[in-house]
Length: 255
Image 1 (tube, rainbow, N blue to C red):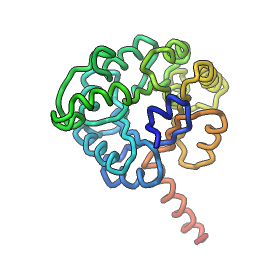
Image 2: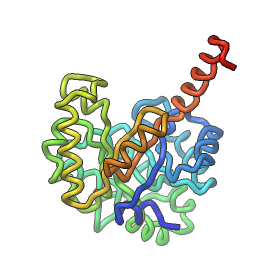
Image 3: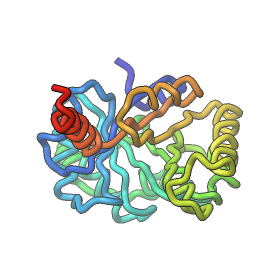
Image 4: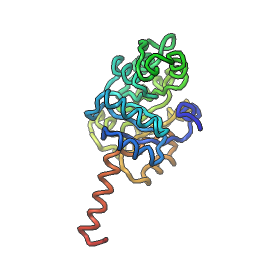
């Protein structure tokens, strides 16, 4: 079976989802649904790094690649998450090539980057640092989130940064940066998305998108458009949408 890194390198379709409910049971349920990877969100949730470590281990136990969306392009946060065993990082609000280069540097050990050396869970508590170092340099994944209009303007230079494995468009924040939070069906927001798409096609880089709605038809639309790195909804939407849908049937006597 190919690793996520290999699929990204080959620009092959890969589908994952988002973890906001910080409980191992939720990770196990989501992993068993067939997702290739799960993103543990530290930016917009109350999840701690200690809890993230448990969720990373749970995901790995189910053969599902654990990624972590950190709260910022911060060296300390990235280092702690990677040392906890994350196999990849998603960095929010990358706006230009310099910020992308810093993200790569924080993720990789010298001579590629500047990540500090420590011994924790990822290095099997000091027993296999050399094996981990080789694996990290070769297989760890770095995804830059394109969620600001400045990132759209600088998309070509971001894509050309060595070590950037792909992009993930955040439609809510992108539309917000243009003054229209959540209105990602506006023509000017669509034009911005199209600019990102064309750049990814030009440089043969994985085109990523977070499909918020939990209905497969919206995911299939993005697949047809050429998106290859797709986050499909969020754990609480899968739970809540199904519950609301079934309760509406009860109210309407449709059972």
